[in-house]
Each structure stands twice: as structure tokens, then as C-alpha cells.
Length: 136
Image 1 (cartoon, helix red, strand yellow):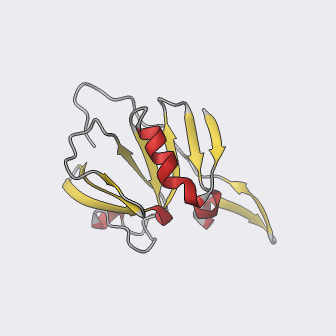
Image 2 (tube, helix red, strand yellow):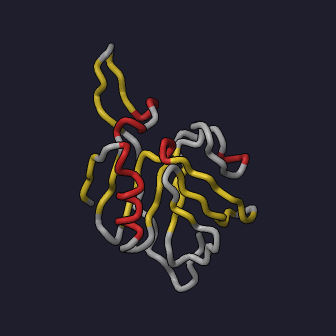
């Protein structure tokens, strides 16, 4: 899997590019302002969500400042609002790449030794391959 570092202002462009190829997994810091997800996911530095134009999501919107979609969770459907400032990684198995936005990776994913940052350690897992009955 190819790893690409991108700039914060490229999130919408990168998301649209990867979604054009198929299912993506976005990595969200749910603690950021404006994030709406099911209550038990709030406060997590890493929530991975699958998105696809092929999922039956009638309200899936890629807006200038955020992504909106009603997604299915084990406890039911929930309208999710994902401001770009909260998205720090996008993985596409179809494209064979993961795009990360280093400025937005949660600080707990960096190992610090004194004042020197050793490097990011987020676990960005590729999305599962779609089956015959896709679920968002």
C-alpha cells in the first residue's frame, strides 16, 4: 500500500479522487469541533468509517467544509457530520494507497522523546472489500 502525505487543503480533492475508484475508509478524530457520530463513538481519537458512492446513502454529501452521510452502525442508522478538520487519513484498497494529513493526526499517535517527534504511529487499516450487500 502506497502512503501519500497530503496538505490539509487537499482533503476534499483526495476524498473525491479515491471515492471515484470505490470504497474508502476515512479516519476521524471524533473529539474535533463539529463532528457528529453516535454518542458512544464521541471522544475517540480514531474512528474508521467506510464511505462509498455505491452504498445506498441518499443523503451522502461531500461539501466544501465537511462530509455528511447517514451511516449504519450495529445500533442503527446515524447522521454523521465529518468536518475536514477532523479527517486525518483516507485509505483506498482499490487505489492501493493511504493518504494522510500529518498536521491533523492526533497527537497521541506520535511518540515523543523530549521535544523531538519520532513519527506517526496511527493504525490505518484498509477497508474490507465490498460484498454483494454493501453496508455503509
